[in-house]
Image (cartoon, rainbow, N blue to C red; front, side, top):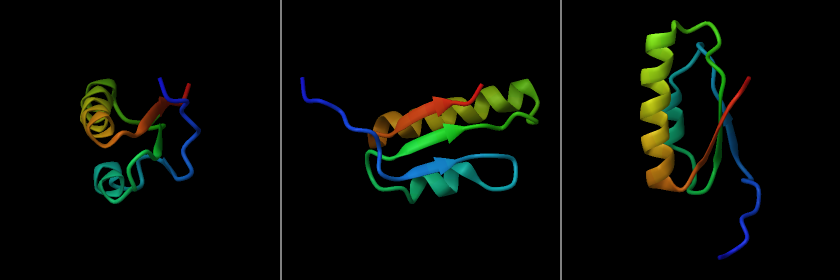
Length: 66
């Protein structure tokens, strides 16, 4: 197993932008910090699921802010 280093580039999401469009422009292996605290739970889960699919496909690290 290769050691994994922290991502050099990070996207911090919130309700003000389009996180899917921004995530598409990230270099492979970047990090995404998912915040969206004010988004209603059903929409938040759906958005997170889409970002998770994209993160897995592109080798990104996806972290949920508490």
